[in-house]
Image 1 (cartoon, rainbow, N blue to C red):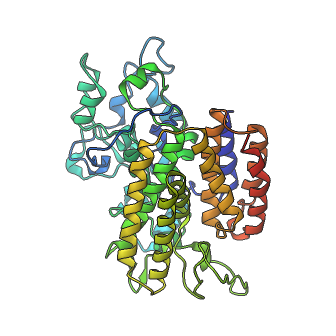
Image 2 (cartoon, rainbow, N blue to C red; image 1 turned 135 degrees about the horizontal axis):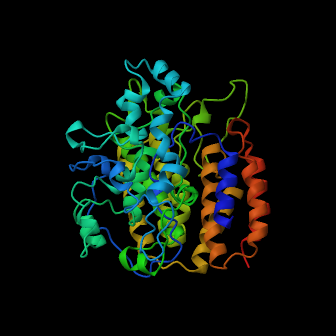
Image 3 (cartoon, rainbow, N blue to C red; image 1 turned 135 degrees about the vertical axis):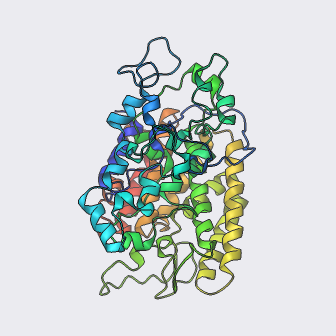
Length: 464
């Protein structure tokens, strides 16, 4: 097992069962790209997500032939493995996402929500547990029971299925015909986040979690690394597609998670649930703890005065964005910090929440553009890693969600440092990271001081 898998699996084993119900998303079809992109690539368009495409979905069976992607073993002289369907169907949790809706827990969630139909027929569940598209876009061999399939991530194949095997086929041509560009980290992040966090079309709301759905938690790079690989990043792959390093994928994922949060917060409908704001955007453990506990903090992590009784916005991704921005440009980091503080104050009643969210979202999008253009080197990796650790030692990860996201971030950045021989001691880092991860085993028993101690022990393993 390599260092990346070890870090990620240790974290996943120690966390709350966040994928028990939500075996969904996009990690199954997306690689951990370890080679650095040497030139900046700027998005020229924002492609429709696969479920938004007007094209028909042909069905997983169209990929399953042994002469296509259904070979039992990989082909020796092919530039693709040809066994991708088998890898997905046998090893990937996404291939069983629909089936989860048939279990007792899903039935209970549907009952608690007062749904008039069972979970496996309810749009609110199918939107993320299947490739749930209008009947007019169903190809002849489409079925919801296919689960989260090839086309749920690579896009409906009506226009590109035949052309993609023709002699003059190219990746660019396939994209123009509707193939979803998973080799682009922005497109990938938006796709994964659409189910693993939510967007304006679909969201695991506080009501859904209150009915029994597991708490959502996601970090693009770690979850990608955990997925069963169904291709090899080699010379041929690099000629056809863009190859991005893992640190950039992590950073872009964090920035776009912030943007998605603020999109929902600013949405007139999704941002509210009756009289209340949409509480899924807020820190779960601000409310879900015994009332007898006296855990009032006089200040928030970024130094603003805490407001007793106020439900606190979950700013875990914003704290990660702060570290990324600071490593890119200290002045930009200060702006992200200042606007995060303004957002907290606005939510507390001191300012315009919509305006504060819009300004912070603009900064997040700026970070995406800068990180895409940034050449990743040893000092930059080290700056990110130490920024994550030192912010934690200063006490910025006092709530479970922030500590959880920081641990995932340190895992992602740490494995990239180890790969490029920037880290002082990968073995010692792995050992100390596992101890750090152990402090996150039970979210309701999380003790910030133990997490800080773990960060202090881990820090010396980073710098040569």
